[in-house]
Length: 277
Image (cartoon, rainbow, N blue to C red; front, side, top):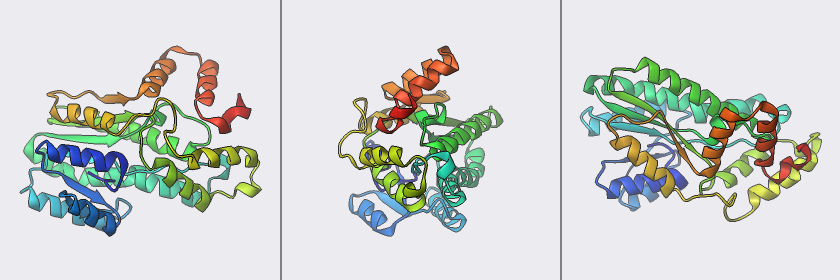
């Protein structure tokens, strides 16, 4: 499992370990690795932005399991806020390196072992924003839309191998997602020089606000429940949707005309999107 330092990753790793799974929980900061080890988890260092780190982690895990790894949960990721016109190329690169490129490289390095075993689960933590784009989240939207396309392709290419690629699509979940997004916003977005200056004031207030992101926010146990289903199912679903907004937008995208869907997406985007309504 990647991205186990906090939130969904940490909770799911602990829950699966308590159920008796042999879990390899990874994080990119050694301080987090040591903290996870202190909790009794089998933790290792893994930075999905680094090919060297991915290769090293794969070797460790396959050695420890004698090549019989059953599942991978690509959970590591973050959100880069900002209007598309304000996103520098370096911000887009960082977003895709972590959210997509690292996940695919790690998957590709583990696939030969799964092919030899004739079974496996490849879980990818996507998002409601992997199929329903919201304003001021363009980099994150794009990385998750791309993830969905890659995993759909993997599912077709791995048909009949016993290896099942699965998309987990959460909506708002209790985690440090907003705090991490706020840090990325300040790193890459020049709010003072932007045509979206007024919007950014509301965005920063939302990102800094303590407590749930929306009334529909669930705890990480909601993701754990579908991860467990995907691991145990004889034929797992292609997608597992988590939280009311994810189910709502999935149906809305099927049924509503584009203009009405756009209005709904803007309304769901938060206080900063008010002027777009």
